[in-house]
Image 1: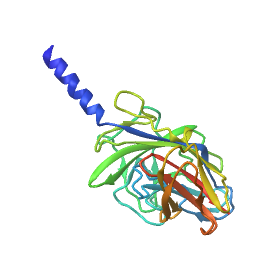
Image 2: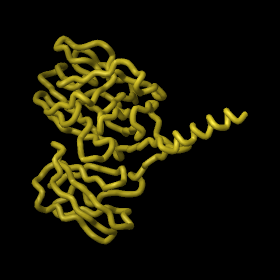
Image 3: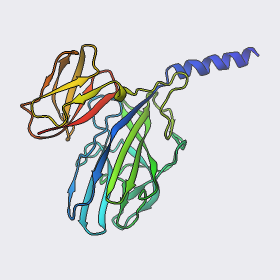
Image 4: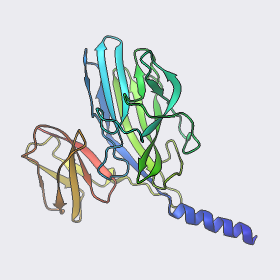
Length: 269
């Protein structure tokens, strides 16, 4: 009985230091592949641990009707981080690019998972040779990234429909070298759900001159990154202040709040 109690105590201590950070994408972010040709990169940078470094991103290439490629890439889409990896299916297209594995909810993602691949061109969510995620509904991409010499595990929830990839949410386990189940948003003992999207909102968006973080009731630090992952502005704002973005060039940016796992995109017109 004493041994059982001791084991339970250690289990609870372990959970106390284990936390899942969950980020819903509200509204869902859509990547449109309906163009007849070309490519587009750095479409949705994800910084899982909010350290200012982009861990994963997305890119598409379209070379004609039925000839398309939808990638999840490590780091920014035209750079490459060999330490950031995706679980793949063990099969590749005719160009040798592997396909990411569509994972079901509750699939374990962790050190014992097989199929981890690092790929300079970015594993494929789907292309003209294999639909892969296409038409399967909500599926998870299993990821891991290296930070301070330790691996961290997580997932990205997507839905791939004709000519459109929809990114819905993502999460990671803050305890290094510790697994996570696909779809686990936290909420149990020692696992906290960080759903700041219900707390904060951004207005106006798109904008020409200023931004206001609606729902902010304190003094907070913020950072703005461009779609290449470069920080272009940072500062401190309180509940009554607006953030002046009039000097930013036109384009899409990501604003994040320091020490709170909240970020969202905005368009500077």
